Length: 198
Ligand SMILES: [Zn+2]
Image 1 (cartoon, rainbow, N blue to C red):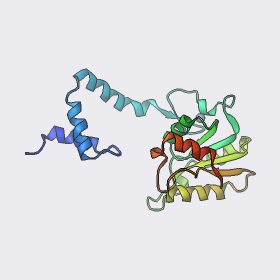
Image 2: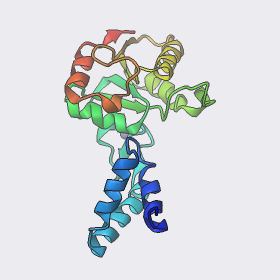
Image 3: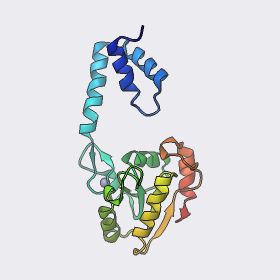
Image 4: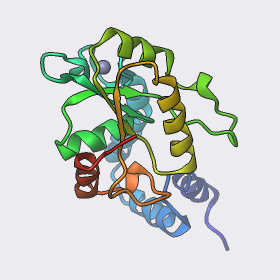
């Protein structure tokens, strides 16, 4: 006898989360069955509401839940330094290292010929506009150390070559083929201080 249909549906839903295999999904599902209805309702509400409560900053692309963007605050951040990232979540990983106080620019993805994601899918026009408008002196490319990350970094280097910039890329300490997601804070901090000219 297999699981009742509703339980199976819950397990299948949980398996859609990254890093959750069948065994973990089963464990989570059975754990949820022990929660009080009020706890389940609160949990469901948070899941349902969160994506609609967050808005990307229209300048840098960082995720916010209010109008003020602390990452674009030129009184608090170094305006001559711009860090380019693929996803909003990468900003939080870098902020945690406390190594970086410059501005951010979120591309919204990486170039991927396999997934047919070309430059038109990335937030590039605003990047060039910001580099031209702000007094950026150095660009830090903080992209995954993967084929897509490398291709995107090369493309950025080419696109920005007309600007008088020092371009560096996070390299040291990040294992090949790994995503920033899986790198611990210490490794990321070291990668920042040892970033190489790109
Ligand atoms: Zn911003």
